[in-house]
Length: 262
Figure 1 (tube, rainbow, N blue to C red):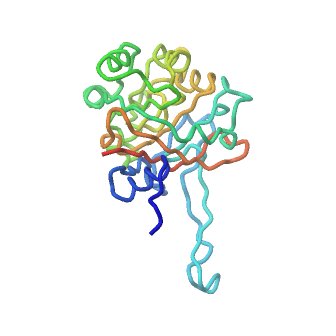
Figure 2: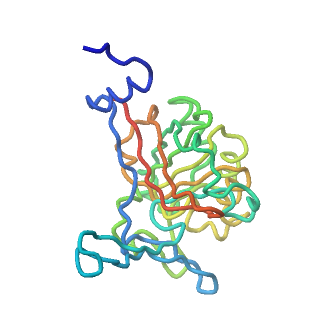
């Protein structure tokens, strides 16, 4: 009988096999019903996800089923690359993001109770510092995952965008917080459950859409429309993100999972 394999990867595969490390899916199912961001009509609009059947075990292909698909880069659970925003113009496209950045530690900051009371809730720097005081510093080179409870609304375009005559109302970060996370915090990206990293009212902020402006302008990343953050530990998870490597792409739909040790 060969000796047992040793090493970090052998230990990981053993832990995955025996369930002591769980793989948690953070990805929203991608379909024609997946909510999408809706911009004012004077701007270009992202496409909803669409499937076009090529064959289904029929005369178009007797032994196989497959589809073409059409989708916006920023539809469903998706990754924002630095070149997505004008402040990151000339920065990395999604195909150029170092693969080492796609497997990183993550922490979960839960403000779902505040967001349930106020859909326009904005995370502040003091909120993050208070969280760090209770837990640990934000992870160097890791991800800040911002839990708002918004994934519970993802089955409805109307409830997800939560718009009225003044525009959408969804939680996010204040401009000061977005700048601090982008310029001073040690994380490489921010993950959210909402349609984008910015608050619904961020069009009226200074600067407009500060999460996009500051994160992309500092070479950091966004990850949106996550699900199941409520099942993750506050600290200790490892985030694994797999965006499509679209050459020159500003982002891409992604499968996002977390490794959680029990």
